[in-house]
Image (cartoon, rainbow, N blue to C red; front, side, top):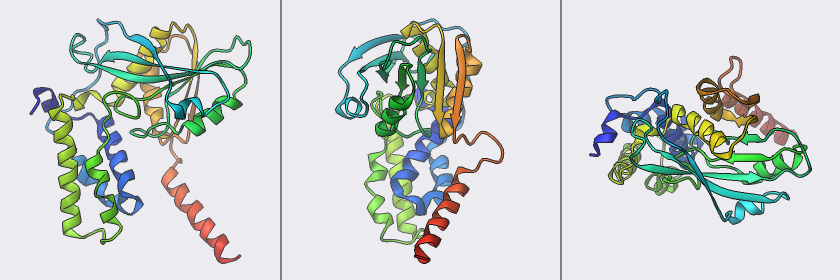
Length: 282
């Protein structure tokens, strides 16, 4: 096993990988499999925090935009990659690339750029939603940062091993022992493949992603900026605020689970029941 992996997974990466896995298997497995996935992915130690003093320079380089990004908005859009150390305690070691898109201002504006950090941890961007948001913001540039391990960022920590058994979950009951065994085996195979590729899984947590936001601001030379998050990516925003709030003007947290009295899963269940009730009474 890669010695870097022996430090274990941070709470953020466990959250991110578990959400991706459960999404692939479908809602019927949501409650029953979270604990199993976390137990399989976790190892003995958790590396906490990031170095207080960076000894590296994050770099941004432009690339052609993927088609789904170009067609998601009426604004002119540029794309690129932000290169940062995978593990900031070893800044000269393995480097990773984080996908960035920049939707240009739709008018001459002095408004600060808006940085969007995406939806829930572990999920890729919904570019249609992002484009809609950009088209309806009045003026500012919208900069999207795809979190490490997701989407077009490199490496991508998705688990095709788990996705491959998703159809089987529709044919068997949730407590089927063979299905549970297949799930555990798929998670283990995914973990071992990533570690075998040299991925330091302990470097894909919320602390590191928060510092990625700060590195992006520095690489783009932004003197002031706003930030928007949706769902559990609010944790990335909080970490960025702690790391270096200089230049940050405002924060928008949509559907965040961080505040008391906010239960998005319960709200979803209530909405689903209300929709079925409407159908029954048609």
